[in-house]
Length: 323
Image (tube, rainbow, N blue to C red):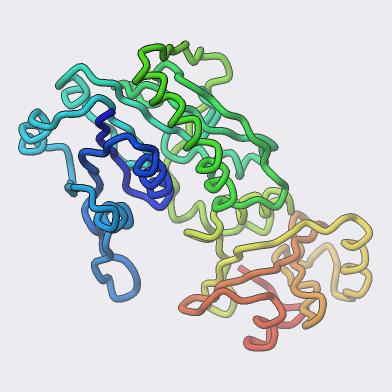
């Protein structure tokens, strides 16, 4: 089948490569324009564009769906359009150009977590299961009928990257099966239903900052949801520091932290470092007498490092406060 591929993120690339190896003919890749990134605001090549070029597939980059794109798109020949993390809503005007199948790969168990941040939302909420849904693309976002859906478990220590890897692992075979069924003429769809429907929202910069008043579990879920990028963060001595991995100690371990802290009184603020030991790591008080133990950090402008290396390099100590 002739396929047009829409995608713009790192999660799009494995699907593009999987399609390429499958034998289905990718006639065109459509992706977003290159963006400025980093401290120097250098123009960074779009990762999907780079992948398409390596595979020898024609591609175009767009900033928005304007009239010029509409006129050009009418000339393209394809049987199926596959959309994977493209980052823009495809206008109804584009969808109606010709009779072709439009498939969207959405990383949740729809109708749960419709919208732009399903993976982040599942991790923020501490879900024990997630999934990938293959649906029809419709003008109403993420409301199309279902071709297929695969469910998988989410581990307690799984982060955003780990969830995305499972979407790729289970999503590519499901997509290829749907395409084969479309080619054979025996694919069918079924309604999502509206029961248990939830919606996600775009992430704001303030969502990334850690609030030490929250429970240890809620803080750890936030760290997991934003790791490795963009990274949940706190401030210490004016330095912005991301936490990429942490864990919630059990009750006996938590009590050991507090037993050695003479300053632990009702007046002590959450965010207090109750332990900064080169061997045991960094433990921080939250939600009155709960503990979050930090394992991996990324100080501003530096590489990711283990807690012990941060202690060695920055000399943080018990009794200091994180903001």
